[in-house]
Image (cartoon, chains in turn blue, yellow):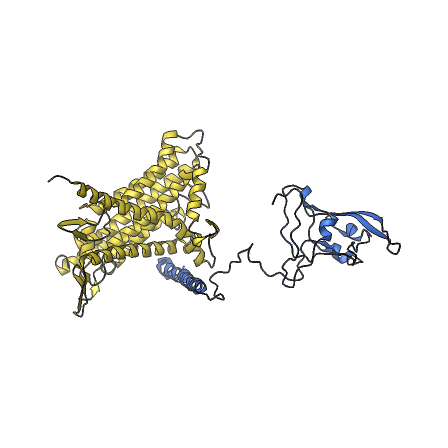
Length: 179
Length: 366
């Protein structure tokens, strides 16, 4: 240690100058903000429920099932996603499709989000582009494991996120969640 | 002369003012601490508590905290000493509150033919009284540590005692210079003596005449408040400290005692080193500048200006102490002891010797 550092007081003062500078600079920004300068920001905080961090369009968020024009799922129950899924969180029950030109459709398509690792392999594996992870929804939680299982109907109702990553459909609320 | 109702009212008013001053300031400090640290660290700080949608910059958070602490379980450890365990937080807060009593917040106020001294208690040994109360406050901490029947709490209490002795000795020795210079142990007399001018234009405040003592006193004073960088008794990151077994409002009272001690140290620093209630160039009859021009002011306005100046100085001192608390990392136990015994104490003695030499050379009090 140098003698100047051993004396300590000079280092204390330089530290106080640094933090004091932050205080007064930020305080000035806050006061300017209060007087209507909305571009003045005294803090880096994003006030989360009201403000959201802009999300990248590549973000892998809650899955959705893509719909055909008549509203039925585009999925043909080929089981590719179920097979590729490393977490084994997708459960598909196949069924006959009423249209003879389409071979199959899922009668059940459940994703257990409690197991999902959000790797995006299901999206890459799908030959029909029937499952995507572009809803922008990140807030899914539940008080029970059953509540983490999202069914075909819930996944079909979701819309893709807006251009800045803001979700356009409401968060699907599992049956066991009160609010 | 018999004491009339008016006399009683005046005494009550003085005590009430000081009590409100320190209690409100101490309560607000929880808010100040959160907000000031947040702004220093580029954050916003607690701002969510609201009444009918009004957030008021997070000012409702102290109220929310108090409600939370009052409604929490009041836990009593099975092997704790019931009486001492419950008495300890009250001892801590009590001595924090009464320590402010002899700190003057203004000169005298003349109403009719009455002369009211603007301090809660007029003591001619005010300095000693404040230190006595401050060091008695550590008994609450030691009681808490001992009666909790918890090794970590005991360690905390023990450290608090060691730290308090270290800090008290440095405080006592460092203000000796001030006492020698102004020739009084009464805080009111010391504040009055700081009204003079040095070389005709510098206010004769303690920070000008005793700069070394100011630094030593502030360091030791911060140590006496038991807050970071001298938070050995608490040691959040190692032993949790003397209040590890406390919950609810009793825990809150220990935190409150720390804030009250901060206010007391700020008030004491103001009285001893920042001229107390003195405003530069303001005298009893008005402003008199060093170049000779004068502005006459009524007596009441002068008194109000002095009270305002004292409050402002205390608030600035608290700001500086908070700035230090949120800037410096904490000392290790042995580092704090070394700083106190091998740093502050010898320097305080040196300050006494220097002050004595200067006084001798100058021939009495300048």
